[in-house]
Image (cartoon, helix red, strand yellow):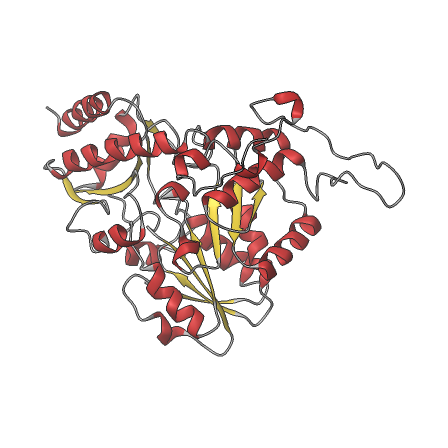
Length: 391
């Protein structure tokens, strides 16, 4: 009989192997976890269950994926949803009319749209704060229930000290919610730094192939896990089995993809800094970035997202129209390099004064760097920039 020895696994291994399912041969020995494409399950007898009753409650394929994501984020539970926004929408059901939330001023436009047009309508109050530089404690009220941040933020790459913020939220008995989409669990684990809930758009780095929508909520608190389980059963936004299979498959290569994409992003960010038509490049891996030291302390990498500002609006428009291999598209985190115009795409529904306050102008572009050969990416950028300059 084999002696069971359990040691802490590195994250690359955790992306591929779910430790609790080792030492057993299930599913006819299938290495790839099966897709259980079933809406309901037969009962062995009255009052008896196989552990699965109806797929809105739970499905074996979804459960396997959720255990993997919980393991990657060092949480006790993860829940898989039909999209990132479905995950955030369900999370907001933790709050009731009259509750107040402090949210980061620079957030994904879909989150801002949800808060402004749905949550506020439901009686929840918000304070928009630059959490990376302002005194968050000064905005806490008697009815404040949570602080919601992204770090780095979308698209301006602001970095908040999660551990320092967690000390404030714990002192005041508030939830700390961190959207970890930009770095993924491979580079950052907010729960380890004091967060209570982690949000992911699984569509992005976890899936990694721009072919599936998904979202996740992860927690290390039993009370929150129980509430989420009740809510997902009640609202029915769980991720479908085939989509779970695709996200699980994507996670297996998360480590190698993140490493390669980050290497490429660093080279492209350096190249952009040297271009005369580029006014500013925002990448947290640069030492001059205000969040550089915080990132070194709380993350294992700087990611593959960068934002840059051109000297003229016309340059930004022309770049979007001239890229070929690099795609002008609204998303991030896939194997392909994408370039996005936040003003008309990801942040189109954000009020103009907030966009300007955050630095999102008609000259700003956001790039999600993929895993292509960096020489090919730089060759295309050189050609496109030469065309834009009229050379």
